[in-house]
Length: 184
Ligand SMILES: [Cu+2]
Image (tube, rainbow, N blue to C red; front, side, top):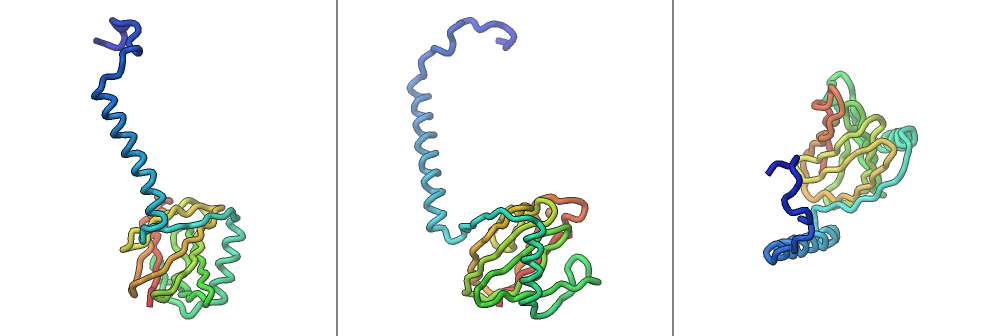
């Protein structure tokens, strides 16, 4: 029957729900509840799940905080990944473990150097458009939005060189938007 014709039975919505349909509604409801409880459970017990806080900020304020962090804690400079003519500071957070990482067209600034086993509070924001912080090769993904400061608690467990990839399309140079975190 085509939808343009009136239904043969005018009170079709009053048809009682069959037993089988009730069973599926019941299964779907129970499964939805299980997943709802798991969200809270993994938040507390899942080792990969980040519990982050978000604060309102402005791009000027975040830029200033990042500049101060870089000025105070830079240990050396390296060639920038996107443009080898530019130097990128490598910054080691002080004992408080506060670090700032800024996304902008098209790089992550600065390079961070962290110590394995230490807990850090990484402040993340963007000073232009929406970017995506994807830490490779781990399964960590965070939206980086101008005007919002995400504070992510992270305890690196393994030494190595980690790459930051922007996974939120942000324009013509998106594919070159890379960053780096060293864990010693
Ligand atoms: Cu991007």
